[in-house]
Length: 577
Image 1: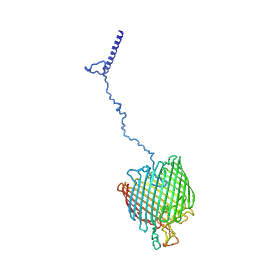
Image 2: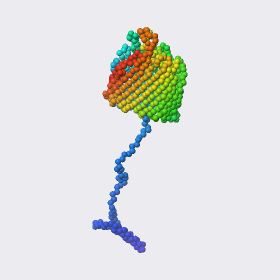
Image 3: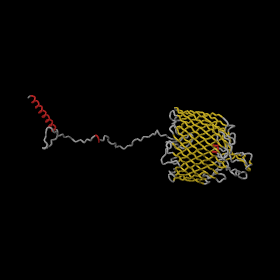
Image 4: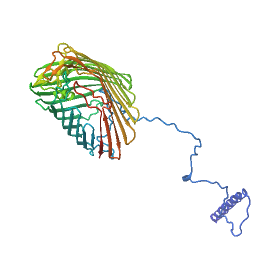
């Protein structure tokens, strides 16, 4: 009974506390009307509070916008992985080479073309170039050219034909390329030699033609030469069979190469070459040269020093061994803008019938072929760049030469008369060394994408010992060229070449078989030759061109008795595909 009583008391006590708490809560709020339809019970509550607009976390904007109008600092970007390709003038000014993947080019660009043109002086030009370069690592093709001209003088005509095939293959460790070709050049001995009665003693000009079958091939490593411990190498082979219209023949085979290894800040290596040359004429000649040039090169950011020696052996009909020191250095006076360079060396320049004929095609039969020995060559100068748009080089040098080759009009009587319209080769500097002092200057300027200018000047002074003059050698030469890209379809090229006076030896002829006993020195006047051409692309693949040569119209002489063609012009069409 007592237990039941305690339970009842607990229930009433709990109900009383809950009722009191509810009444206390209503006392804190403003009284409101009670809906009679909703009875109030002890187990229902009506909670009232102020409205607070709160967004869910998913749609909140936690950062206010910056209303200030300011520009961020624009940093100067530095592309370290792009090479700054500037004009390389260590060996002369030349066209810039763009670093790219092998044979890569735009899809709409082609290198194949054919060209045909005609002009005055019975000029006919035909030219073709075909190449397959759609493969990434392989390129091959062929080329052909024909040009002939005929002047107003009896026998004054020229013709050249050149045809060949070429190929190139890039492998991972090395690159192989080569050319096999045939070249023919023909002309006549049309030299204008007159006697005292103004009669031409060369009434029936003889023909002359040179045939040249040649091959050259090269294997070059693809090693990064600036990489530590890198070994770079190259092997090159050259061979030709050369023949004139008469009895002279020349066979030549040459093998050359180099090996270089980079060790820390210097390179060690050697250049090697061997050239076997045989001339088959009335007096056959064997003229061979082999050389090795070991060196050590120290290279830093602002200097480059090379020390070595040049060991040259001449053998064949005669033998001789020569040792020359090799010292070369260049230093940056103003890095990337002005470099001072200097050096001293020596060497042997191999004489060849082919080389003489290319320089002067009016050679006599049975000429003497010798080597030229440069006992000493000292030089110094300045070179530099101003970005990739301007490059220059100025050099002064002094040489001591044994066997300086000179062209002189023939003094011999052949057949039924004299042949002064043919040239012999004589050599100076055997009794005492001949000297050659010279100044060279080169410049290349890219004014803009539309205009490119270039020029070269040579000033030479020869002191000969065994002859009276440095026959046929000019003391001043100047060459300038320009290209103007007027638009994407119109291009203009111009070239100006000048040469100073030269000296020649001449006799007075009473007839073709009688001449004066003593020769005299004559002066061949200086000349200037200005050429210009233009090309216009009618369509993407079709264009027309015109080129004018010797615009000044002067029938100047490079060699005595041989006037050049006057003003001549040629025009035609070209088609690329």
